[in-house]
Image 1 (tube, one colour):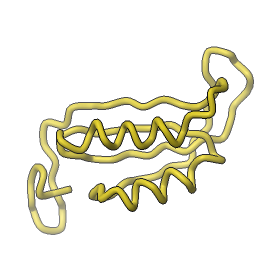
Image 2 (cartoon, rainbow, N blue to C red):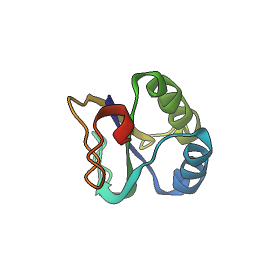
Image 3 (cartoon, helix red, strand yellow):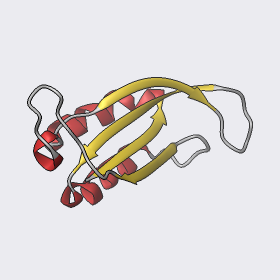
Length: 100
């Protein structure tokens, strides 16, 4: 299992969100965040998307986000991938991939 965390521009959010919903991912969590990069051009409003995914979904999901989020200018965002040791669905007690 992996956790994909993407920080994206505010103006790209709706387009990326719609694309991810159509892609068949199990679900995602979205937070409104603020931050700045190494250019220090002030705090900018961004969105953070968090997705739990099976190994076979990771490359496809990253590629979808990268293609839609890229403008070619400073501030396009970041994508991080974390390894998840265990994942549990609280309601049913399911574990691992079935908990997604």
